Amino acid sequence: MVKVGVLGHTGRLGKPLVEILNKHPYVEIIYTHSASEPSKITLLESKAKLVFSALDKGVSKEYEHEWRDIRVIDLSIDHRYHPEWIYGLPEINREKIK
Image 1 (cartoon, rainbow, N blue to C red):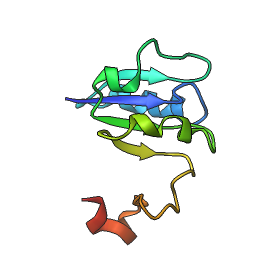
Image 2: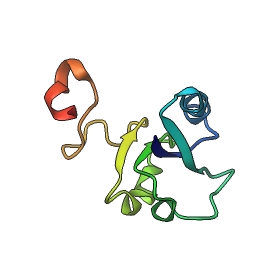
Image 3: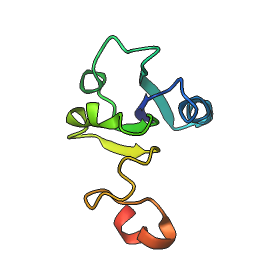
Image 4: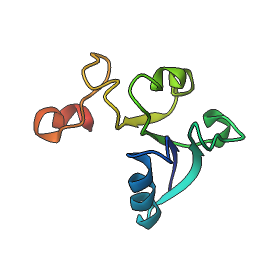
């Protein structure tokens, strides 16, 4: 079971993502946070191994300090062209995604 967190779980990207993850047999959502429904604990305290960022453009910078030891899948455009992040398109970056 992979323990995941979802940032922006009440938004346009986050709601359908939570629905998909709730149906996945090997995923347990243990952390959610959004502007309208903030979490009572930090992402680090949650012990999530993977976090999905479904935040609005420019908002993810507020949370990057918590991502040090956590694998992040950013659904926003904030890191799409950032040189330190891997764009998750398998047709282009199959080896890097592994």
